[in-house]
Length: 339
Image (cartoon, rainbow, N blue to C red; front, side, top):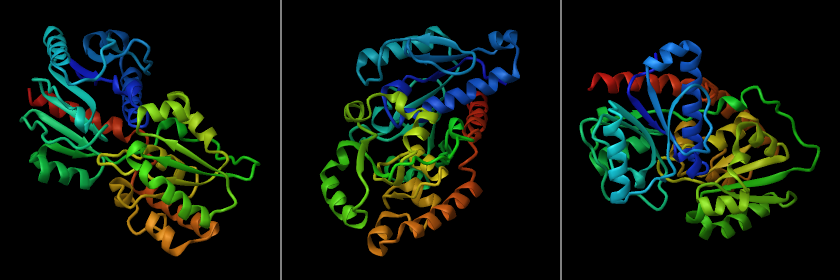
């Protein structure tokens, strides 16, 4: 059942590139699940509000609150959010936030799905009793516990999954020779890019290469020319002529949706050892960057490692695109019981 007097803030889905995919997919799946199980009359009674920018589109039926106000940490934004929740008599709130953009914190019970930082890890995180956090890896959960003293019972581990839109997408390959794609973690990885490119070019010299920054919004807009390129089917289309992918993004609280979807498609995907989510899902894999550089496997060996990774990821529920929706619904029930 749809929870009543819950406000879900989905603005980050249009403000951030790759991290915004997590919010977009979760809200779409929640909207579809609730709309399929209730009548119009029940939807009006069980009012769940969606805070969004006017141009944003989400699946399902929602009681929308449209605002052009972006995610900021200024006193004006704090006062506006406080007034909104107070005037609407919200009983609970779910936010998707970069870890360095989590203030101001609502006074009502709040669930926060933590996303990678825009600039860096913050000095302090609020840890009120009514605050609960969702993270993508055990390492991130330990970071909250040890560095920010968040109680363990306020942290939920939610393993990343692929999006429903890529399920069943035809795993075709382009007739072209193929490319090597680098998914770069924005400006934080730019200093290492030339060194990586030089090393990897020696191992795969015959493939054209493309670099796609995915974390820094300004770089993203310049290189990828629009968030619509990351929609499920368009992302699958973009991968058709990719024969090898390097996922070099490894910030804290990273949700590696694009890397997982490349693996689902059967594309050998080399990932940074420091990426906590992928390292926990695929421990000891030959797809780790250090093993790739040391062992220099052939493309056939990488394909074998990719098939093994796909099987392991499937056994861990990564291909279950509806899992986050079910988990969030259980967390909403927990939030409402805490009122």
